[in-house]
Length: 217
Image (tube, rainbow, N blue to C red):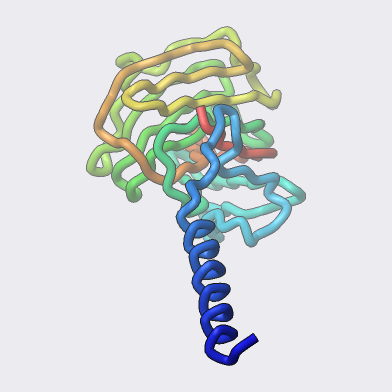
């Protein structure tokens, strides 16, 4: 082949290869299907990024394939987040109160902006529950004026399966496969997810979370 023709041939090959690479780069990502995990953790590794803490009044940390909150005084509020940013999600966790007197409250967070702005879904170990929001550092209950009794909550030191749905302006709360509350609110549209525990007004408490998964709804 003539030298000039060879050069043209090689140039054509390079152009075709570059075009194929650009086409691959512009190829749309596959859609996220309903039910597909967006973030999940079995708490087997510190590398998953949950906020930890250790002080005289509070410990939050990974322990034996779980994430544990140990609150050593009454009326302590604590939460941990992994540092993700999600919009419409369905959260599922398995959790159990593993220490302290009745009155310990625990659950999950969605659309966390900062410590003063997020939604929370909480149950208590004596059978009460509510959906609420943190706004400028103040807690507001959205589903009812107070936490209401819920039959599906397993009280005491029994494990509970908690599900929270944050979809558009719809907030839905499911405990042990029973829908217990749903509200509409459009204050927050996306943000981090998290775990939350509040000790009783009498003493501290301990809660263990065994799993966490956020699905595409």
